[in-house]
Amino acid sequence: MMNSLGINKPCKETKVVVAMSGGVDSSVVAALMKEEGYNVTGITLKLYDDVKQSKEGRQCCAGQDIMDAKRVSEKISIKHEILYYQKKFKSEVIDSFIDSYAAGETPIPCVQCNQTVKFRDLFRYARELKADALVTGHYVSRIQRNGHASMYRAKDINRDQSYFLFSTTQEQLNFLRFPLGEIDKLETRSIAKKLNLNVADKPDSQDICFVPNGDYSSVIKKFRPESFKTGKIIDIKGNQIGEHEGIINYTIGQRKGIKISSSKPLYVVNINAKDNTVIVGNKENLEIKEILLREINMLASEKEFDEIVNVKVRSTGKLLKAKIKFIDNYAKVEILDKETGISPGQACVFYSKDDFGDKVLGGGWIDKTFNNFLST
Image: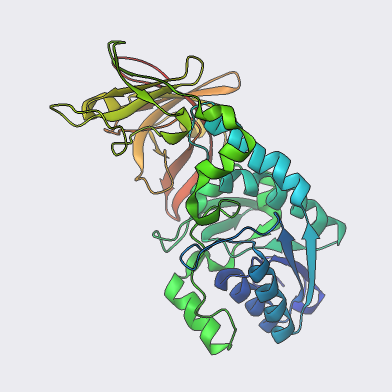
């Protein structure tokens, strides 16, 4: 008989590892697994040495979060372990983040964290513990049919995290479980209060964990000071109209902080790291019609891309209609809806609609963007 996780074992004989960040979501997941009678081990990752933060700045995986995860584990009487992954996190997430910004891109370290230390290294460790599943507090739905697991956007679309999990492999997805995919955040907090968990009212993390108070430029300046080299600000015709204090201070679509007077508002439309220039133009110059993706991860066959599919090109963005063509290890995406300010370094995630909702087909990293006047 299948248990609630879709595993053909009694709950008490099913060993699960719960990734516990110290927040309300993963704490509730651990408590629910315990309540259902599973053999639960909570694991918290120590990813970086603590940084100073203000009361307003809220980060995940900090020292306080590790203590909160330990308190929850004691409260619900489960085993708890801490894995010290600082070196791995530094080399694979922080360094990659810095490299990407220095190259004029806009990176997403949370995806790289999931891709490496969480769903690769923690996945392996859970396997070593002979666990039957790795359970997380992500808001994403997982549906299994005929022994094959598929990922869908969460019921609570405002909390959906499927964009950040596009690089999950099929092997990992078969092993992963996401109990919060079918409930909303208010219900999660309600469960935490009913169970009298100490994190029931804990605010959600807001900042990138290794960036104190959202000041990413200070982190990059520490490791890559040459990224703050002054250079030219040019218009789309190649004329210099100003000077910048480092490409690291600019992102595609930025309007504030350009400090150049103009009859029409100016936006950053391109960043060229090779010649250290920032290109500015009007809002219409931000419209992107085609993008090239690298490092494609597929959770579906290429046949599912024969028709028009939906894509998401930023975590807070809407689904856009698109046509996708695969070329070797790349994908060319023709965007059929109007969209502006797409930046290299971000992810493009593929979706299709079926009876269960918006299914994740895979995705890739945005390598280049194309519009009517230039390409990045």
